[in-house]
Image 1 (cartoon, one colour):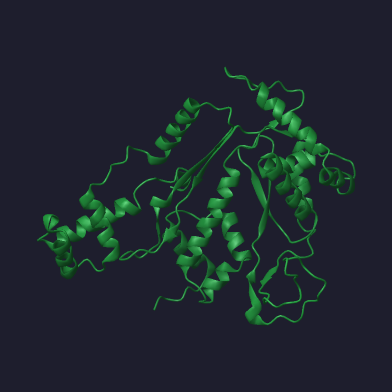
Image 2 (image 1 turned 45 degrees about the vertical axis):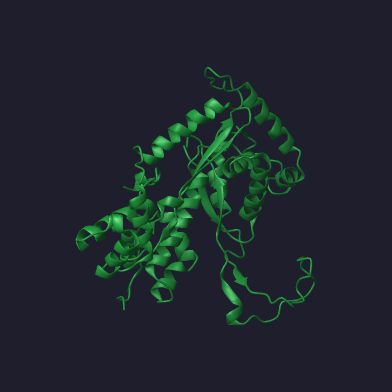
Length: 360
């Protein structure tokens, strides 16, 4: 039985040891708000479980914040390289003009901003001033039975009233949503948690809608809504799908399943195949670090055998020799070493997380 963790600081040190890098301050605060920290301190869950949740939260936010939000600044000449960006800027201006006439934008600017568009540098202060507007900063997820009168068969909510809810029907706290925004001169987006109601919840909802509709970043949509700056659309985006952390045999801590890493490239159809190939080549080099080595048939089979058979003892070595007589081992130390190395290369070797280097 593992020793009980007595304090939040001790738990944080243990989680950071499991992850192998420091936990971002904002991520730890979210874990506290979500009661994930107290759940571990009360013995209801494990530090490994918390480490995995923190990893997922940080990965999600990094996908939102790693790209620099760009805007067309009025009365400022846009820089242009050898390939003109006239089409990109024209599209950006056209989409922003359409967005300005949308009902939700007009209503928000009239009712919430009272017709006063903010300056770019005023956004952060305005957001801070409205962070306490929420009457309900948190919410609970409640399980509702199939035969409940609260919902029609179509899934729409009816006019029924909620009854008293039992402890077994409470699933847990609802996820904490974030409002993304940009600051002048910043190379990445900022984020603040938002409650279930209030002014920032309205901003977050509209920004998310605009971002999905016009393929903007959420931070760009927030700045557009508050300060009317035109978001400069991207003609391509590259996302790194980080590997999940899992428990594997004979290992104390969670390990990244690097074999499940994925690269997602979203491009404008106007980009040529050659340009796409060059871009992916650059990303692949950054991701892999060095040229990956392919595994032989023997080592692939050995890796699979090591996953299925634990422990790697004399009995396992005998089974291996019976199944693959041409690759038979006579020394247990050599067999167990080769099997573990083969398994590591198949599941955990490459690619490295290029954004995690900042934590090293």
